[in-house]
Image (cartoon, rainbow, N blue to C red; front, side, top):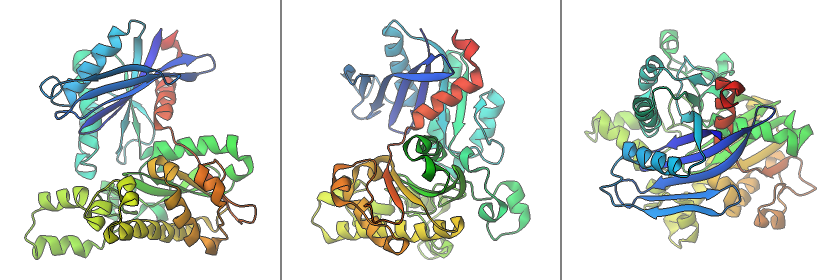
Length: 396
């Protein structure tokens, strides 16, 4: 059986899914798993399509000390399953810069160009590119496809794309890109099946997780996003501050004596929910806490979501629907309730019981906008893109 392997690599974990192709250029999920705790408490877990456990094993830190080792261990296990003949590998790559507006077949030259965007996404880009390099060294004949989180937003108009800075910087690529595009693309593809009329209208999608952003969809196309040049803008996140006055950065440099590297580490690792609460970047822990700072962090998160919803509503000229997705959006009834309460001015009204149960439609019949909870599936989008780039003939 020929298959597509989808890889989403991070600094301490390697997520993967395996898909087979079906007639009509469709893909079917066979396996999903991850190897987390890299270098500390490595653990490889995987489940079959029916949810049955296919693998659950601990490793020593010496066996899986870094991301290349995690890739090797995962590849060895996949080969050991016996039935897998990889035809291609699809990767999530956070930043495609100004060059890449659609998925590409990765070449060594393209890989070098993508490395130039590491400073714009230091938490993600190095880890996204590392497995591509490692697999290319191990299996240079195996096609690899890069799918970009920025690509879905590349249709934005110049008003949405520009900062108020000299044009020559825009020409160099200093512009608002937007991220989480694979997630928003999946939601845009899913909406016609769930709510056909709404899919043609004006929808705000809130991708709320450790990384968080919001996107304005008009007829299924992205017209505005809360994230910009880097993954620091917009909403507060697990450890990132979201929108911040650039003067704060100048203050850290001039008054606190921090160098550029220290500022980068601070903004990417010490802010957001973690910085506000002083406790954790995990919303589940904050919701369970009785500490006042945890409660403040939760309320601040909901407040900023509502503020950004107002911005996106202006970009759309009105709102017909609101979609919650990603880890917090899909699982936190509290956040959904608090955000919706702040959107009452848009006519939003929640159905409390439906929200508590996490149903797909959680707005009340009296609500003037439809409110949905839709699980996202970035890996499925990567598999579809990989099949499209490689072509069905490679899987025959």
